[in-house]
Length: 291
Image (cartoon, rainbow, N blue to C red; front, side, top):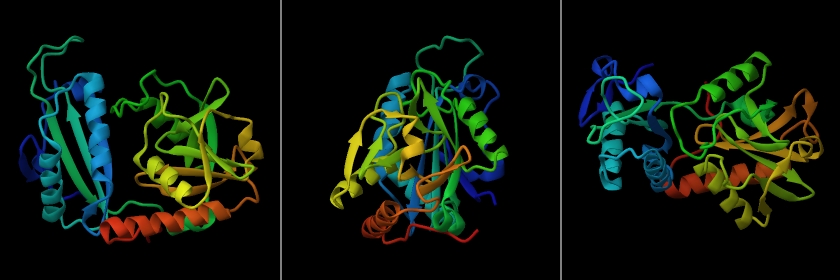
């Protein structure tokens, strides 16, 4: 269901009336950045980390952000209240602005800002309880994967390939190394150590940071280093982390079971710890939602 109200360029307007010009560079060139922020109990989770990443993406593409962190927070709070969203997500979208179509841009363009709050999201009870399937695909994306740009066509095609294979996620592999998923970061448990790709041309996932934080607090060794794809066949557990997927266990990759073919004990410990952290910071509850 569509939200009643969206934020567009300084105004809260009805969803059906929120339109942008056809020559917006976000539409023409994917010249835009975005963030997705989960909210629990009507409160954004790890908002400052998301806004920091938004600022980093904007700086990389030389898009001037029109709001301070305090202003973003006020916009988000009002948007959540206007739409009555308690458990859901906020989508922030900033384009370079509107100009006659040309590859180069002129200075002084006014960025287009859109914010949408929507109820729902989060993993299904079945995904949390049973784990999910994944496939591996060649990582053919560009060289700035750490920038959260709207140019997501390779991710979209890979995710569609996964869906056609009956899988939840596609895991990118580049030069024989696991990088990340189409909308998630990847963790591999091998011989008691949890590995994840270092922050080198992957998206610096906010939930990825929470997982690392919680793992270390719970005595689980974490190493940020390159992961050979061959490790996926030997892994005791494989985990996905993301804003909407939270933490999920991968129980099958490319048709082969991971570990015992069911969510493992490290996943269970981290999921429980994640739920506690969300409750501490928002008063809400993470985990499975009924569809």
